[in-house]
Image (tube, rainbow, N blue to C red; front, side, top):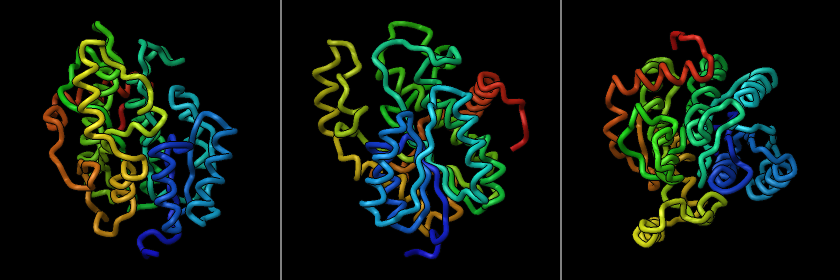
Length: 292
């Protein structure tokens, strides 16, 4: 067991199945105490048992949390802050890919709410504990086809609504905010990096009907099968960023599914785009602008 991870505590959101659960198993095998989240308490209990069995680590806890609800994200942060004396690793893994246009209970487009605002809010709420526990690591999990960001279409207001496109766009926004947070936290011993899991068809999200128009499906299906990997393999980059000794102090990195460093989407490097995303995000989560 690595000295880097002994006695560490990690929080992995959306870890009752798929990539999140495999990530939790990978961390637990190293002796890390892992807190997992999900919406379904029954499934959460099963996941705890499965992770314990697969890792041989009994120190696994489930906390019910709905990442589509800002109130629930606040409750999760409150629970962690109150119960745990430290937090060494935060992995924002929870995500959604929806076929139809939906709004969260806060009136926010569902992809933007869960894939971007939830990790943005949770990370900010847990920053005091992460700072207290430093050196610490934040890992945000992306997906889809990250690329150009349209500041006039952050919540997929402009049609037509295509689920996979809205999903990919929300992940691109999350990445830009992650890059910005890494810059703001540089020198604080709290690192922020992004992991790309690859195309995973074996998970609940990946096994959904392809969320693209009919005319795109033949080409998209071929690409998707070519990029397909297992949830276990997809979790490798998150586990590596969260626990590898050589990643200590490394921040602002984007790693592919093979844990290799790759370039960020061009929009992530644009300071004006990042500033606007930050401003909009703070307003939507009703967070007062604050120094990081």
